[in-house]
Length: 200
Image (cartoon, rainbow, N blue to C red; front, side):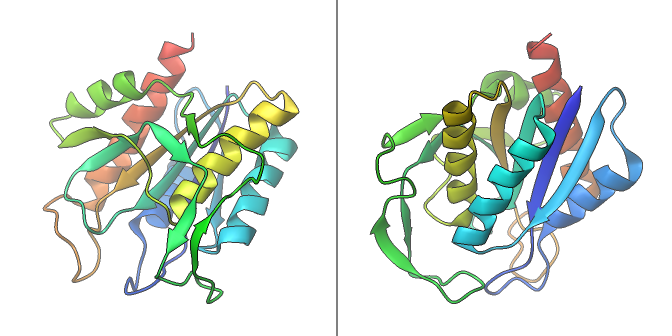
């Protein structure tokens, strides 16, 4: 099974982004049964959207899981919805901020993740880790990537199933979680395995 997993570079007040550390670990260690491709996305609206579309076209994966950090959360969040909206006062790493800007001008307001959200939550919960379903992925670059991927896959007829995992900050002084990086790596593995199993 071909799987693409992405994380993000640091941004804003974060000296490090745990999502890219998770992806680096998965890339180095592999995930049993998966032909795994990992990538680090820029925390830049336009560039991240372009790169996620390129990855979908280049690899035509069975699954795509993007991972990002949500520093205001203390639990792992499986995202249910991507919104067709960029809306932030926090500039991205290219200095771009925007208000009420659609990601795809003609696109629907929201698109649902096509990975099995409830199965992923259950798999992470079985590890004894705090996990929730979140009803949308915000309006920053994480959400941009989720919506762009879902819209592009549908427009191009890719069969890729797509989802997003938000993890709490565990690396720098902004951390509000007692989880460690090992916990987050285990959660990502469990989510991927649940996604693959649900599609079998």
